Image 1 (cartoon, rainbow over the protein chains, first blue to last red):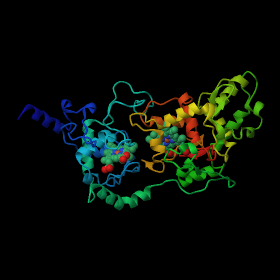
Image 2 (cartoon, rainbow over the protein chains, first blue to last red):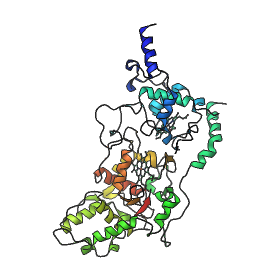
Image 3 (cartoon, rainbow over the protein chains, first blue to last red):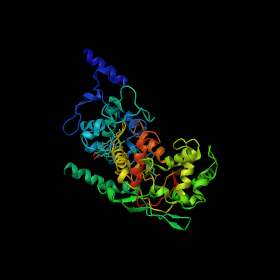
Image 4 (cartoon, each protein chain N blue to C red):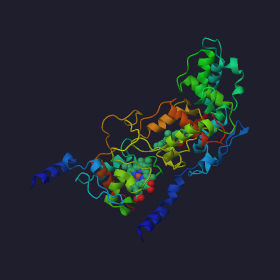
Length: 159
Length: 285
């Protein structure tokens, strides 16, 4: 077994990617349709974790804008974006990764925020404090959280 | 079946529950105290011809029936308690000149029309003034009293008392002449996508009014009903404080109440309501 494989396997076991393998937001490469073909971490996403990210108000908060029929226990699904209940059937992982990282690459001017982006903001704030951001801006979701949400979205199928 | 057709079919199958959820604006009628019928929907003013919006709608139409009912009766509208406080302040002598608001303006109904036409250009000062700026000008220059902090409780209560004098009158702010530059600045701010979430006022209140964003039913973000009594914090809330809250929710650095930016934005947003009745103090959740 090669050393890198061992590291990868260890990282997978711990559920986190080796920092060196993580594609930084500024390095993510989009196809002309706005897809990102390559995994951002090399570590397969965990749909359970992705579901948590999707409903957490401080993280993805995807349900603020999207209805997800598979989550009937989560109160108040929004209507700003299209329903995601069959996304796993109609979208590819590459499309979803691209949409999550920066939906404007596929849908110009969309209101959907870019979850894996760190520059180009107007008056970026420090979380929800209303104060100016200090230091480097972190993406809203980490690379692995993006992969986790992609994995979760791939499970959304009409049954 | 191509991809588009597939999505469309699925969307059709799923349409029923989604539509059932969608609120939009309701068709209720706002009659104040069983007497004054308010204009809560109107044709969009001419300056909005380049927007998606052809009808302007009061925020009242996006609230639950129970919340709506509270605003229909002054005995139920808790904002009116603060209007009474504002009235008491109106009559209170303060400052080195030994005067109150009432010393110069006499009865509160001399304030009729003010809420409908502010923010307004002040020729002598050569500046655009909100109601609160005008109140502070009176305090400093006529009463010899200290100005109130922007959106301070006492200032909002008096502002609400003043607004209540215009209830039922159509909002009619001037947008050209000397205020043109400020109006343009406000418009620019309205459409600028700020913060880490990159959302503008228009993202929520123009493109998505009528839709739910999580538990919140998005309105057009009109300010004809300000100051608003919010059940959430049980007090009157000022326009600039509301702007600040909305900008903060885009994960942006906000402007401050009383800032040049928010004064300009107030004029612009108010002008998007030209034709709706003044409702302040309204009741919101």
